[in-house]
Length: 244
Figure 1: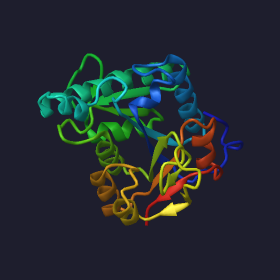
Figure 2: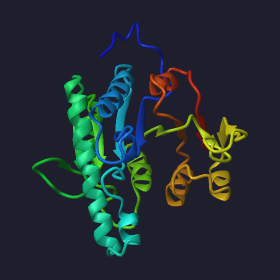
Figure 3: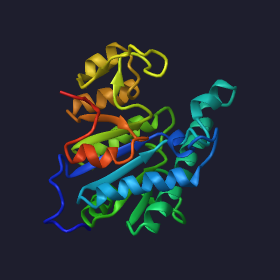
Figure 4: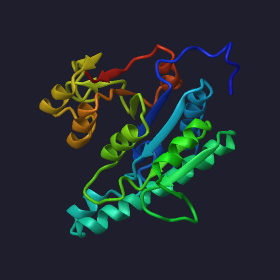
């Protein structure tokens, strides 16, 4: 841990970082790209070194996406469970990268698989955070028909996180795709209801509604910008705040 006298004051003391599975595949079209996983682990460590308690939820779309499998004729519940297992694989990869950097990490699964991950017990997870361990919540909520966005919002509320940090490919929320439309407008802040009404795709509707009902802010930022995660917590950087 960094020396307290040299550590800048951060905006939040406990946060949840939500990233997609696709964020781990780099320029590949599928799977895990180890240098990208390493870079994300270094970003997380840089924030952990500030004294911030960190939870993570990682999607599984780089390996298997339940909704896509369902669309191709697979039974939806089975497809969703396969997607949950993909998130466990991603969580283990990030855990390995973090622990190689000296950051103690626990993978906590909503589906029991005791040989590779701890079962989800809220009080135990909170204790891990209090002991400066990064907690990676895997397997979504443990239920089909719920996305990892909803799982992230649920776990953030259960862990009493002060914000959700949603790492994306762009530096905030835009009124339309900035990669397709040069005149796209970026919001510095926006309300939950505007996100829902304008279908801005920050997170799915149930996740936004759950965050709104608990006044949990969502910080949308670019995971591709080196130091972006740490910068925002230190009061710098470009991002959009979704919240009250």
